[in-house]
Each structure stands twice: as structure tokens, then as C-alpha cells.
Image (cartoon, rainbow, N blue to C red; front, side, top):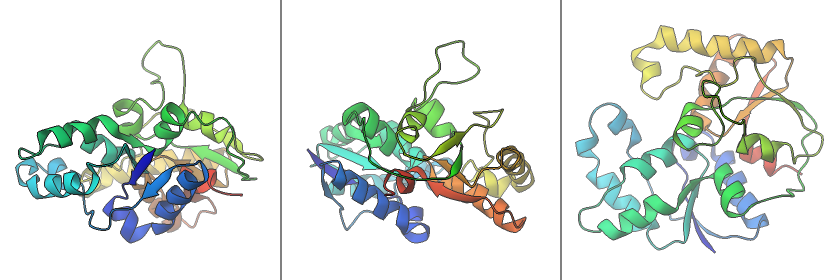
Length: 244
């Protein structure tokens, strides 16, 4: 199984430890992992701002970098969803389709493809789980409270395999944190208020860390936590699953 590691640009620049943890975790689980050196932004920020017609360069570059792998895996649900739903290349349509059908967010890859049942990881802390909108409603990583269906969570299933970890869920388990990509720029006040509400529930649960499958949401919550001097920290799920 040849896996192409997709590390979104903001993770590469701001949270490289998440990329390293993802690489190490996939290697531990027996994957042949490669990191294409010429990968850049997937183009999601432009698309979110209404400029998807300018994305052809990003799309072509993505196809050039990732079309030869069996699977493409990334630790960011929103970026993975953007590629899955929007990647196109008029010069190489079959390659673009292959990528869209074989790109996975990390936790869904571990659950659905590798079917991981024993991670041999340890993280002796109380951890609050944040469900990101893109992962939950776009990729189907967990059930949605507004639908009367059996509950499930691929992220929780993985965290429950971690020795010593005590998992906590906020009362409003799948409420948006307010990040929303460019939403946090254009609607700053609303975005911050939503983030503060999320943080308050986790603090009420007296957690040590807040985790999730999307670094962008964690980045938003991290900024709010730091500004208020909270003892709670954020950590991406890849860092927990890779922790020994």
C-alpha cells in the first residue's frame, strides 16, 4: 500500500508536529509513506472566498503530486473534503477522479481502510473532543445530533484505544467552533463568540486538552484559550495516537 502524505499548507507552516506525527503513525501501522516535496495549498481558501475559477494551478499541481499513489491521506478534514468534492484537471480527468476517490482524512483512513484495532499508544490525560463540521457533516466521521440515527464516531473509537486517556464530550457535542475558514475573518465577532462558547464547555469539564481531527478548528480554539490565559491546551488527534 503506497500512501501519499498530504500536509496542508497551514499545518506545514504553523503546526509541523502534526505532519510529523501523521507520518510516524502511518509508518508504525505498516504503510509505505511518501511525502511529495512539491505539494502546496489545495486551493480551499480561494474557493471559500468565491474564486474557485482561479484554482486550476492548485488543482494541476495536486494531480501532478498525488496521482500515482494507492491512497492519499491528510490530517485535515476540511482540506481533504475540498479535494474530494472539487478537484478537477481538464488535462488529466482520470487522474483527478482517482485522487478524489482515494483521498482520506487520517481518522477515516485508520478506521475504514486499515481497520485499526490496537494502537499501542498512551496518553494519561483528560481530553475533550471537538467535532469539526467538515469532518462530521462532510466526511461522515461521526453521527449528527439533529438526525435520529444510531450514534457513532470514528474519532472516538480511535481515542478509546489509547491507554490512560479519559475522554470528555461537551453537552452540545457537535456545535461549530466558529472558525469556518474565511468566516473568522469576515465575521470576527460572531466567530470569537462561538469559539468562546466551545471553550467554556470544555473548561467546565476540567479537561487537560482539547483534541479533534481538524487543525484549523483547534487553531481557532487555541487562540481563544491563550488570550484568556487558560490552562487547557489543544492537540491534534494524530499527536495523541502517535504518543507512547
